[in-house]
Length: 449
Image 1 (cartoon, rainbow, N blue to C red):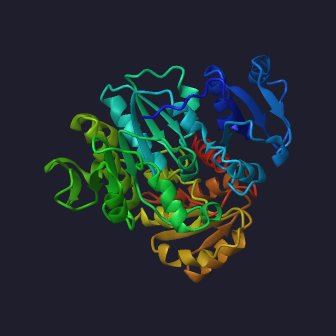
Image 2 (tube, rainbow, N blue to C red):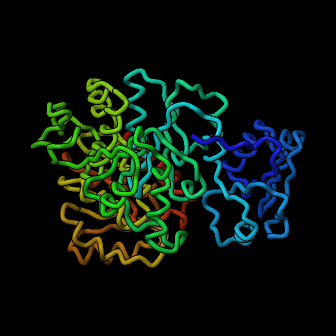
Image 3 (cartoon, one colour):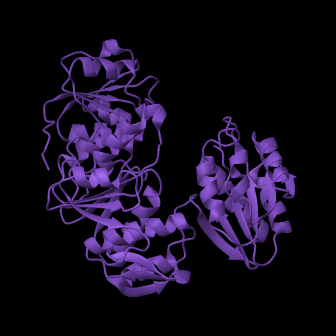
């Protein structure tokens, strides 16, 4: 990988979220001159802030474009900040490179990099790969969009570690020199068009993950993806594809079994994750794991035990022969469609949240196995109307906390209780994590477990 030299460079860090803090700390370690710009006040009592001030970092509480001039060598921006922002537009006009903290981190790492991107399934797939490597006694460190800025792990990272990254399109746009040993694109839909402007720009951002790869490196692609043929044509990497049934694939499904190298590994009924979408995530993760020489025994162990990522169709447990799932991350209709399609058992569905004007009637065909709907939040009335249109009984409550004991009272042996709101959480909760945690906490209190 080409290394960028940040020593003695003047660098603006734009945005003081966790990634901005991590980038600033790493740049100080690399002996750069750093100016941090934010549109809100800094917590001056914060120990990290105080140390960085002592290290010579300048903090500016003003995000107008007059704080940037041609003396800066780089701008490191928070991935979520749009390129239309005045400072970023000025940087573009001054021909100042705009990077994300991932680029800073990778510039000084010479070990093996595995990078995962895609529209859906990134976190689950990355977590599966991590757990398979750990079960195989391989040293792996995860970072990126999965929750830890890459700069945070660099100081303790060894060259013998595998650096496993989950990367969003926002991060990839500011990581021009990334060159992973193995890159995986799970799937691409038309996401984040408010940020990218159109689907072509979004796809180009995803392609950044393989743009610099060579023939000695590997790109894993979804054989059924709309953009797979173009990516395969444009990349220099060796392409390995995954899909459910193709006999040419290293990993595939045959009948009711997961197959690796044409040998049955395990029946699908032994896999703890549920849903057809998770089967695709598993195929992708196992394909990458086999490129990293993970043993079949380690893969099988993980697939028997891995219950999902928190708040993403997370299996909470089985109590009184009723299965409970926390899918609080389902903040849109598509995510809830996936969740509802994952169960053939009678399902008690907990739904509702921030009303962003979505047409919940799109979920009508997906309520086939739903036996009861419990509605809450701003979209409560829309959920009620959907349930009535589907001729399903519906109960209204004020919150997730109130929904749980109602669901428990109505659930019978063999049922599924599913929190999958089909809406953002901000009408009642600070984020979807808090909403999901309330579901799990109330469930355990109600059941006394």
